[in-house]
Length: 292
Image (tube, rainbow, N blue to C red; front, side):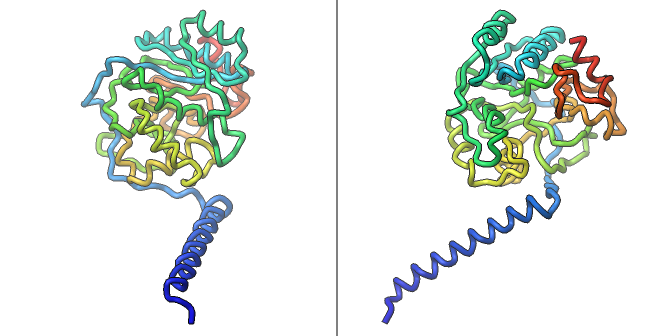
């Protein structure tokens, strides 16, 4: 006669394997067949009626040998619009000593981050994108704003570092163009992590990185991962921002409300990058980069 305890163990193991298989099947279907889902939220976009200045705040970006020119342009655009906060650049392995010295000479603070310290269990080609998770370790600052090094600041956006962010949360735009009305509720496929505000905290860093590989990333990068991470709480830990703080250049063609004067941070997504001549069809925006 088979002991009841043994049968219970076998039954539990089979159920666990079945659940794992179902989850695996769902992930495959999501990637291959189903369109990305839209998240409906109860949240409104942040209107800056409430602010929370930080005692020590900074912009943070990253550099490798290919993005060096981007970091320089970003920093010069920040100085031109009168940003009062410093730029910290996380330099990964391929950043040469000469490039790092040039960044320092421009007034940019640098910090080395080895690729071996990063983890991307999704798509290896996006490994360096996960350097932005290191922002949570920058506990010498009360608040930081990550900003991709293929962006330009067209107008001063220092108010981002006064957004009241929840202890374990972020403030960011969504991954499509939106200039919200006061009554608009947030609807999104993914959050946009090209620009986001957070409170550095080792506790939060461990909470986030502990979920790597456990949660899905629909694009194989940090953006899909962080979308899954904050979706678990129905985005209650996210303050959503207008696209003026992270406006993707694609909006020139796909957004009927495109208006350059409303954009504070312009994001040159896609390839070729603007320091390599830019992408055909976006010459109007490329001129902004060339003149920066």
